[in-house]
Amino acid sequence: MIWILALVVVGIFNAMLAQRKGYASYGWFFAAGPIGYLVLAFLPDLTPVMGKEKPGAASTRALGNRIGYGISIFTIILVLGWWLSKDVQPVAAGL
Image (cartoon, rainbow, N blue to C red; front, side, top):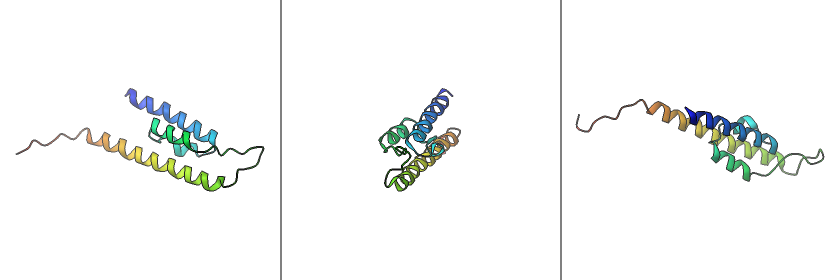
């Protein structure tokens, strides 16, 4: 149960960093905990400088958000698969 709390805390950090760098915070919340944080840390900062958006920022933002959504969807599928499979008992060989 504590790992869920840890993932939520890391998810909040992911969302805050994404918003600060100009990406969709809701797309990065579930982005694989520390892995998503590392990926996001290497994406370029897209915040406007003195009110002007950087050249190519829209396409870079769209790509960065797609990466975040992809990692988030992968994480959700992985966690749901683990959660659903932990109740399944293995079948003994030869039965």
